[in-house]
Length: 139
Ligand SMILES: Cc1cc2nc3c(=O)[nH]c(=O)nc-3n(C[C@H](O)[C@H](O)[C@H](O)COP(=O)(O)O)c2cc1C
Image 1: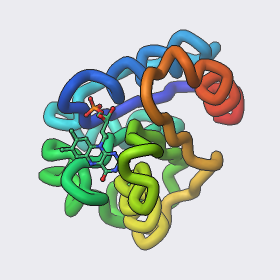
Image 2: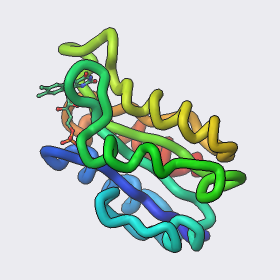
Image 3: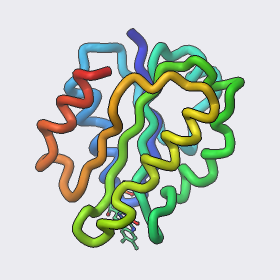
Image 4: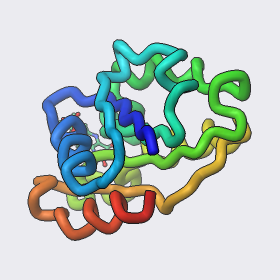
């Protein structure tokens, strides 16, 4: 199965989560920064994993913010997808990983097929390795 992971990451945490997901999957996995993802890459993938950290107060990461309006039915309708991201559950309990919720809602509106519960990581990805492995195995 061809899996595309496209992430938005400001300080590298969501990028690290992307790598850990890849390492724990037995699929053909390609990782790309959301700034550079091409529509053909999404179309060619069997499953697309979208990742974004949360910034401001419950907002999308900057690069993902530039991308979100490109999520529409022509690209994502019927596509198998799942969503993940980094956040801070202690500092931002009310809007912890809100970007993951925003992207999930957008994908639902576009008619995508969400294949897994989302993955929300607080703090160091290495400390959430078991959750990351569970997410990777659920794809
Ligand atoms: C100014 C600032 C605002 C933040 N806002 C949120 C937030 O609203 N919700 C949340 O869960 N995490 C928030 N965070 C935590 C970041 O999402 C966290 O540091 C994350 O690991 C960054 O991931 P990235 O390096 O992939 O961008 C914030 C962090 C900073 C410094």
